[in-house]
Length: 587
Image (cartoon, rainbow, N blue to C red; front, side):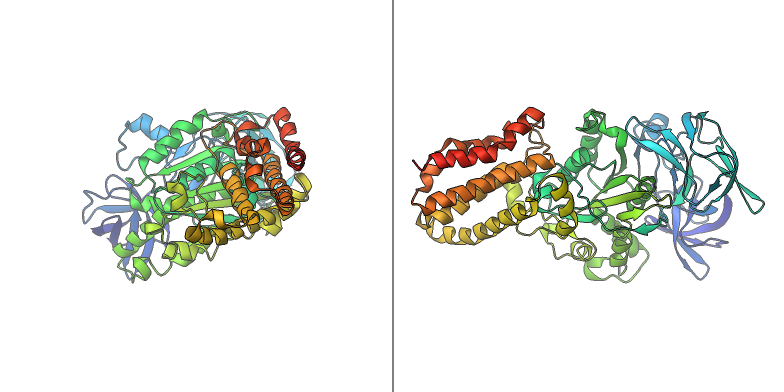
């Protein structure tokens, strides 16, 4: 129930200063003016309150009433989230379009979840059972891919006095009643949770499984673990958004949440037009059945941009608590930080480097620390992997957002403008990027793919580093002056960069590479180098090796071998074919 809690004193863009405030608390959600614009209390000083409003404040005036329900900004969590498109404060854009048309008026209030839709509830407990906090009480088949586990809220526990039988129920129909010390609590299929408060869990556990993205440069050279954090910095046009699109399409995460934070409208339009057509390569079902979009484009109110990141991570925590692995794409945290800077300026706070507020590092830490692999309150394992892009002005990685972000992440995919200009995608620099998850995920690769994975990964990285040094010489004297063994390094790295690191998002075969295909391709290239090096030691000219049929076979292999069993069997024989073909050159 709304209660009057103050009056507008002055308006400073998206920030409203309120006077005559009563019983307002920090981070309380409020509604401002006759149109009930949604806002949040961000500062209390003397008898004044400062409110950041998530909608356009045009036409607000002094004396307008401010209302509150007395609780913080929250999201609704329950069946119906998957496949939906929300704005930064979890208003469903499809419903708003049906209600308002293509231009959304201010002050529109709609529920995030459909209250009338019936869901088939399956009870997993019975009357008399004692339910702990966060325990699963039932299940709903939300989509063909995802079974939605109905969780008891983290603040509820007790003995089941009554539980609904299996059948069709709406979100507003109670499904259970818990009793604890003579007090009863009704349980529904949905719950509310404040976006700025992390959801509780059992304990953190070490990460040990890679997030397989299907992108070779990522999975083989710079892997990220499920439950890890990675940042993708790059200037305009280097392909940050494309990389996140590819990971959202092809990664082996159970749930994908894509937050378009301050991005251009045409980029979000491209996502929303393409994703409904995509099919999951494993399950052969539409990818939308495991995806949630939060669209907060650059022309939307700046304050809502600041809230969208917290909305996304709270939804991710909810599915993590069901035992799922969640990939959260935040595109981009620079726009989020710019929203912080603008709001901080409106609040007249002391700016630090490049005008960002002093609390920028702590806000970044709060966000990234909500990632991780955990044991849930229901004793299952769940994880959140954060893949966040950063848009440093001019590609300067020393600017505040990038430099502070590096303190809280363990994986860094640096995008190179020269590679992007050369149409080499993904344009991830193999010189500037790094991953600290190699030792964490090597056990998974050795068990599920091959025990030589890590040694081969180190071998190709060593060749790339040698190539980098040789290229400095080539710039001065040209490649023809180099010894044949050094020219072989250049040729091998050229094959590796053009055949392995470069990947086409528009080719049906090349867009996605399984972990086994990646290893076999890498093994073939390493075998080519080792065998060719032996031939050159015996006096063979490198031009003879380049003219061989197997050289051309390696160049074409990324487009030639699909993920079918027949093609994978052929690719598995390619390293042996490389060896035998090069041995034939000796005669």
